[in-house]
Length: 240
Image (cartoon, rainbow, N blue to C red):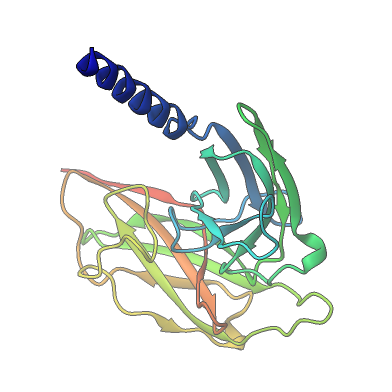
C-alpha cells in the first residue's frame, strides 16, 4: 500500500511540474517595412548587416532588454515567433537618419495575430543604376550609376561622404556581407563633386564561364555605423 501511495504521489508531482512548465510557444507575429518618402522599401543587406528592428517589450518593464529582428534586402521584416505583448518598435543602425522618439511605434501584438509596423525614413543616399551591369569582351563586369544625398531632416546634420563599392556574388544576397573580393577592387573614396554624376565601375578580374552573377553598388557616409545605401540587385549571365 505504501508503495502505491508513493507512486501516486510521485505521479502527481511530475504531472503538476509538467503542467507548470508547458507554456504555449510564441505565436504572435510582427511584419512591416522600412521605406523612403516615395514608399519604396530601402535597398539593404539580408540579415542584420545593414539595419535592425529594435523591439522593447513594455508589458512587464519600462526598461526591458531589447530584442532585435533582422531585415530583408527589400527593407521588409517578419517575425512570427513573438510572445504577445506591447512593444515599442524602432528601426536602428541603418543607412538613414535616426528617427525621433515621436516616430517610434507602440504595437500591441496578440497571440495568433499579425501586427504591422511600417516606417518612413530618410536614407542618407539614393543610389541608382544609369546602365545595367553587363559583361565586357574580356568577361569583366561593368556598370554605371549615380548617387545623390538626401537633405538632412530638421535638427540633424548631414554626414560626410565616405566611399562606394562594387559588390558581386554568385548568390542573390549580395552586399557588404556577401561578395567576392577576389574579383572586385577596393572601395573608392566618394567626394562631393561626384554627387549626381555618372560613375562607371568595373570588376578587376574576369568572371567564370557559364555562371550567373548578382551585382549591386553601395555608397555610404561616414556616420557611426557606416552602412551602405544600395542599388537594386541586377544579374549578369556569363555565357559558355
